[in-house]
Image (tube, helix red, strand yellow):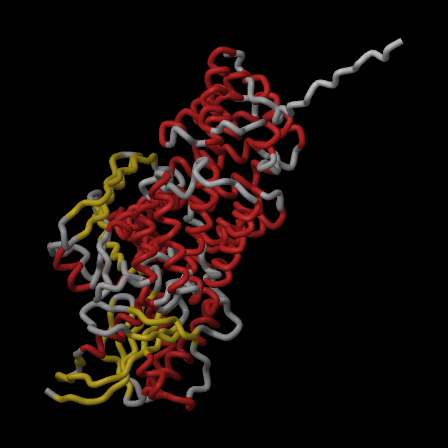
Length: 599
């Protein structure tokens, strides 16, 4: 068996399974035509085809310069060919390039450096190229193209992280997309690695495209989160149809968590089941089932993907927050402090909030660039004031806005950071700035249901309450377990302002069930009861509110409300006054005694 130094290029087509499901013969013919068109480029750069796969190929080059230049030429040609095709027929290759010592046996090549090239292809953006630091360094200044730093990545069975550099065709928006789709946190903070196994199809070959498409969509949706890293489809689709234990799969692909599921169809009904597991412990962290009618297939697939990604992402947050510190020594890092603060935050008590705030501040002090810690600190400060645990002062709001703005600057691809900034703008009456920020959040992550809910807040504060209720309802259905968002209280306000007092009362009760001291929940409950004419209950609700917040007055309470429509403020004020909440603080005036002049 021969050993030699070689440059390896691995390529596949993004979304190939879905395209085959829609048009098997046409997709195969198109792939063959594209492969024939780029074959001369391979030969002209000294390359050879080691292996053709169903949706890609593996190439060997004697020179790393030749390999990278060939990859650039092929992707440039593919961009030109795709330009003349409908979007649903365009084929986008993902390419990975690495170099190193390989073992050659007849026409095959083997070894870790071949595996790294395969893993690099999995993290490349469609239409783009991912190049290892080793390959880039060897190519040096002889490259005529610019590569962007995508940070360190961990790959299965590769001991050390691999620094990745990326490229996309000039004039395309893929360079920006590479940055957006990549992990948002520095490599040392992305402790969780998530693998999505191909969903099992229990309905026969005709539905294979749906189960594969759902898996690919879920991989994409989860990859838009900044908290963890999601492995590409090539890492997990290799196990499709194989009877391998999840523990073994996790060890081979270096995954902290695995998602697996199934698709079953009966008539015009379809059922999707999914579960999130921690393979090393054999622990099932979450399970979900979705029953839907067959209709607009892509709309249904998108809805299920949104539901799945929202539920799974939140459970991974919870699992990571409760995990022991992963630092190699006893000294907790900024990330460990953040995770410990997050674990206290989930308990949702006054004492735990205080501990969380202290830990988030410590994390920021240790690493001022840790954007997510800043976002959570701002969130918990504002929530603490809404729960009545922290005084709602002007300084608190200024501090929270500054934290949100710095979080966006440090991580401009975080939908959570932009959602938080939008919320703070909306609460302060900066309506246009709030809308701009929330539109950016949704653009960054269309599957972020928290962002959809914050869009509802933006509509609520400008008086569009029906749209607000629609968005809050969507967020509740798909993302009800995330403590960052108080959908119950927000729904209570929107229904109240629509005059739907019974619904408002139901939502306020749900809010108070989770947190009996919730200031806004107590206040809107009293107002809704008063508007319903339930005078005695309204009086009791007002007494409960004042018992928790003795100094509260309507005037003081409404200072924190910056709704655009004066009629909405007046409507809410009316309910509070009807319930018996005092308007303002009574001033004690000493009586003036007039003495009659002696005649």
